Image (cartoon, rainbow, N blue to C red):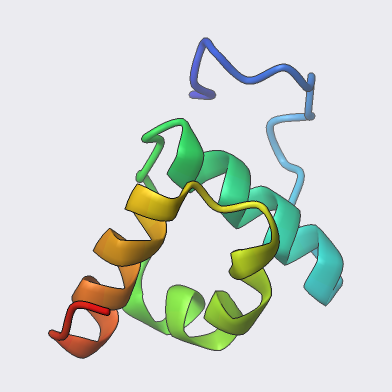
Length: 71
């Protein structure tokens, strides 16, 4: 089930394929608190790409989740 506040109509079976798609997808999910389906492996792999658009507060939370440290 997709979150109600997404402004894009994606098919239910859509999955990101490129690094840019993953970055867009993760930023959207994190910024809108749609954390379903996210795991440490995915966030660790693509974290370096998220700084572009990620809310600063969310960036701190993700960094703490991944490293246990605050910036």
